[in-house]
Image (tube, rainbow, N blue to C red):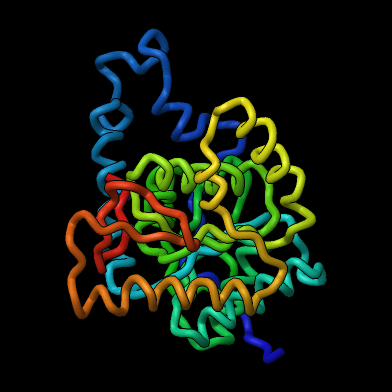
Amino acid sequence: MPSAKPQPNPSLNRANRIGAPTEDERLLESPSISPAPSADFTHSDPWRVFRIMGEFVEGFDSLAAVGKAVTIFGSARVKPDHPQYAAARTTARLMAEAGFSVITGGGPGIMEAANRGAREGKALSIGCNIELPFEQGINGYVDIAVNFRYFFVRKTMFMKYAEAFVIFPGGFGTMDELFEALTLIQTGKVRNFPVILFGSDYWKGLLDWIGTTMLEEGKISRDDLKLLIVTDSPEEATRTVVDFYERNFATAQETPAPASTTVSATEGGSTDGTPAHPAKHDAE
């Protein structure tokens, strides 16, 4: 596999406040412990609203010209010599060679592998970094770096600018991103799009639980199981995304679809009432 040299961080992570309250903690503070009325306005809730708006504006402005893209998620703890790192790197390279930019969380592990593969495939490599109580610097394979204080703003960027999600083994953060995507598709807040789980052995226990406990207790419908695609092959993941894009976007841009048309990530899967549109899906 060709090697891509890491470059100096394009953006410094501003999170270096170990022991200090996080932005989310301050945002969710009880009124009884909020700053006194005489406190600096920049620490008040109205000011935080402006900061949140500013993050959205910065993200939209930075990523507006990205074009078609795939978001790749996974653990930050995976080392470069791990097979999952190699698989993510290969998957991202194939996506890049197919004409897709690659978006990640910008950190180490699977994120670094995906950004590295994107650069090897000569595509735009994007990192949406998050400030954490512990340091998470942006990896050296990112071309466009955007820093966020708030997870919900960051997740909007992942969703808005990607035609598909490829989700490698990960922890709580990866699960958060996975289930938010499934919820938005299930409820019709976004159009159906490929949500690909990479690594059948890793995901088997979760999928068994979803297919038995959740389904058998009536917490989800059988059609909801069609929202997930499982693979162990970078080539299959890439082919799934390319086929979906060509089926739903290449023709849609030539002939606009009627508002009642739905699109599906898998044969037979649908999100009733969700209009197909050549623009990327937005969580409204």
